[in-house]
Length: 472
Image (cartoon, rainbow, N blue to C red; front, side, top):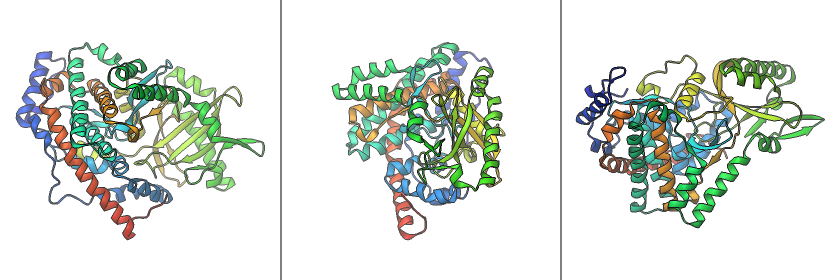
């Protein structure tokens, strides 16, 4: 478990800004900002593949080879699935002791365009499967390392990658300084909307880069339940159903025989009703106007492959009024072993609470529930819309200038998320006005990218030797 220094004593409730700033500056004594450059695997570092195997033991067996297959494709894809490995590695690195609610998996593809309840496009963190309170530095370092790994995949030079990472970390530091000077409600209402992205594009990108941003904004608005409805459903034998695409999408009807399927379908119908009690009353009323039509198991992401994920086709006033919900299994965070267990008894509630705390605005249907699975085991789930104006970055298409601009927006967004839960004044005082922390994290990110490449190579070798199964 992460060791906190003597200077990590939290400020008393309602401490003055001066007292909170003094706390942050005092933390430099035990964890100098330059010390964040350090990363060298300990001589007795555990086998990273054993961590993956331990996770796989709790997952759907026939989907595990897909996960390994995706992770072997590239060091970046490996990194996306290796949050548990990095959490174990970060546990041995210096920390200031100032804690915040962490994303737990803050790589660059977990920052994306999302819809606000007011139907505005905002830019925010998206994935909170691993969220838990912990050292704020860990999220910053995971973001920084992801930028190096993506930059290497694109053939960027050492100098270009250094500039990208330092800019992202500087953006985090400078944004935290701004939040430290804001009133509490100003921090709570802060967000990055689509117009901010257009401004960044206009100031920093070429004509091609600006067009790419405009195209991404337009594409995000088209990704909603109607688009999912057109892509994922069909009418078969006079009945509307989710289109099979095994093993990526498998309808419940194809997983279970009739009698058993009907029982599980009733269980899922009960889940939709009971999970509604975790929503605000107005949203619960809206949910009640939809009825469940079909259910399917869906493969999602890279790190999440093999966890149980179900999609629910719901219909409202008629057959042209769809809503797709996604129920995703929530297990303990990969951070828990190193930062302490969640205070929530339901892991789905842990995810939802962390998401609501860190995001500027969250999905109106975001909630949680515990339910018996098709294997009879009780599991925790969190539920949200499958698609709601989501737009994702394409790092492989980025030039250095574009990735630098994207990293800066990510850094500022992460600072806003941490400022909502952590002591923003103490963090800003710890970081200071110079680039000491920026340069240190840049050094760490390159070293960790080296380690990630070694771990990826070990996975490829394990697959080649037959130790781990692969598919796809």
